[in-house]
Length: 382
Image (cartoon, rainbow, N blue to C red; front, side, top):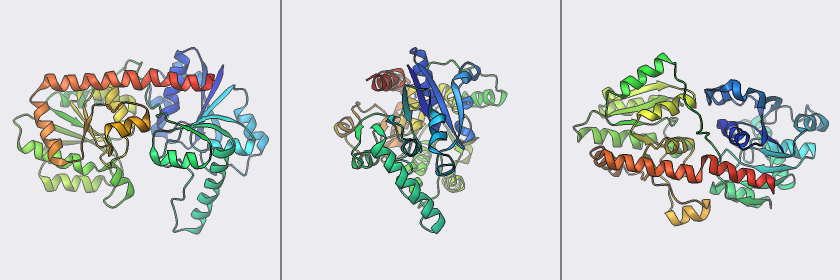
């Protein structure tokens, strides 16, 4: 059975491809142009030579790009030779034009990418995005067998197309690979981590106050909680943040205002394979506090057994109903006082902190990783 995994935002399908090949399925990754160097497969594996034969670069953009430049036949030729197709990005639109059937679509964006207009200030952008939305919805309605998501906004839009929609998380992480660290700078960072306890680590991007993305990320909540924790601990804590996003300057100003500059280090944007290696040396993680179901950072923390803070604005019963998964046992709060108190109590009880990490690893092994990959495999085998 040959399976094409189309698009690679966040390296989701590169992870799925590796699990599928481990299971004996002839899966290949078909990448769009312009998906971003940060999410290139070589940034997600220490064994890129092993996987290169199963990665193909297409000449299609994940967007309007060549949509009108390429003929139906040219698009069909790009995707020919496979028994099953799983796609993200603009794949439904391309399959609509080519008259192909997409077995499974998994959106990577809240609300399903390319189904809404982002820009309304410039007429040319509004027109472009309107056209993209038109063809994407056509592809979802007419050329997609199943849409899989656990995001509520995406689910509502998927159901509006009339296409079958199931609860299916994005498969974001391959955790069956041993790190090969020869990076001198990375080892220096790890050495610095070892001089502190606890190390609180957040690789979430920073966005300016007032922006929609800021309301999703809310890095300021973790920063304020850490500052409060610092005032009341005898430990030597360290907050690790990344120079990533348009709101970094605002976060740095907040840190100055709180007087904790000497307790914070900023790391440059780095590949996930390096981040996963660093996570082996941290004690707490900080994810997103806007209320939505966690993003990629949460999966990464759980895969490494790092207890983390995150806010999901729903009771456990509702989460289970919508996602068909039990709520993982992360620290679910967006309250600064609660987060600061949790940092304090668990820092003083390393055994409890270790047990919290083990519970998350257990959840990941049962609900994500290889177990989740098997759900994808069962869908294409039907």
